[in-house]
Length: 207
Image 1 (cartoon, rainbow, N blue to C red):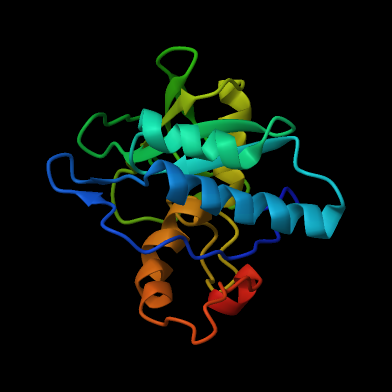
Image 2 (cartoon, rainbow, N blue to C red):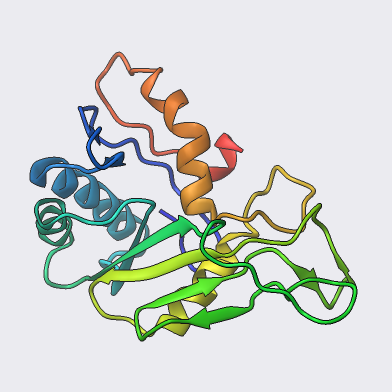
C-alpha cells in the first residue's frame, strides 16, 4: 500500500496456485482477493481513523470478474476501487523525435478514455540528458475496472517510478507498485512466519 505522501506498507497476500498457465497471468480467487484488500483497508483505517476514499490496484495482469468481486467486497462501500493494468509495450510502439535526445519522460499517448502509452523513461529537461542506453519503450496503461480520469492515473504512475529509496537512479521504468512486487514477492513467500501473522512493515525496510 502506497500513500500520496510516498510512504508504503508491505502486505503478503495468501499463498495459492494463482498462476494460470493458459493466460500466463496471476489471478486471485474471490476469498483471497477480499482478504487482501481487507488487510489494506484495516491498516489504513488504523493509521487515519477512516477508510480511504479511493484505492488504486495496480497489476500486470487483467482483472477477472471473480477477483474483482473480492476486491470490491473487501473495500466496502466507503472506498472507491479502481483497477489499473500496467504492461510493457516494448513490442507495440517506438516513438522518435527530432534532435539528439529521445522522447521526453512523462510523454503520454492516449488511445481512448481508459488506455494510453506512457513513457516513464526518456529525456529529462531538468537534467538536460537521457539516462538510458537505447530508445525508451513505453508502458501500456489501462484503467480496466472502475472509473477515474486517465490523466490522474498516469500522473500517479509517473510519480511511483521515483520511490525506490535504495537506488541512485533518477527513476525506475516501472512504478514501485509493480517493480517491488516482482522483486520481493519471492522473498516474502519464502519466509513463512511461525505465529501465522502477516508482515506489515514500512516499505523502506524492504528496499
